[in-house]
Length: 207
Image 1 (cartoon, rainbow, N blue to C red):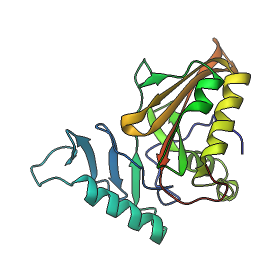
Image 2 (cartoon, rainbow, N blue to C red):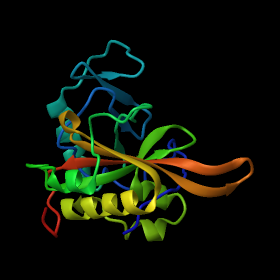
Image 3 (cartoon, rainbow, N blue to C red):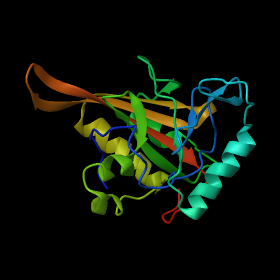
């Protein structure tokens, strides 16, 4: 499995169910239905967008709904992590030694999301692939073991230009940003952002 750098319309209907239920939520995360209904987490509650006063969801309710969507393979529900700002959230990971020293317990796996350049949203990796080749997307794992996440991060740090890595423990997420060369008029590079959202989903391969 290689790292991704694809573009797709974030507004397109989901092909796949959510890759997993995140081990933790964070304010600014979004829970979306294929009907167009959207809730955003604010001060620990999930409120409608726009807020029509119809009430809110709790973390437990959103967790249950996402888990049911994963189990039922229902693409009608989508989790959208909050994108990072100009400064990557959390503790800066300065070296590979720092990376491999991190403990992610009790998480057992991670789902990879990528920043979609057109809309500035984070999109599950296999959804980006599906926008270009749906058949190939079925071979992209929903979640990966933690050792594979570390391996992918190691590849990025060693092979990409100006890599930055951070770990935001409160949200259970690893962020990585780097520059990728492109052949576009007036541009030599494009900025890529990957977010690994930790989860408790079982996956072969261990931690």
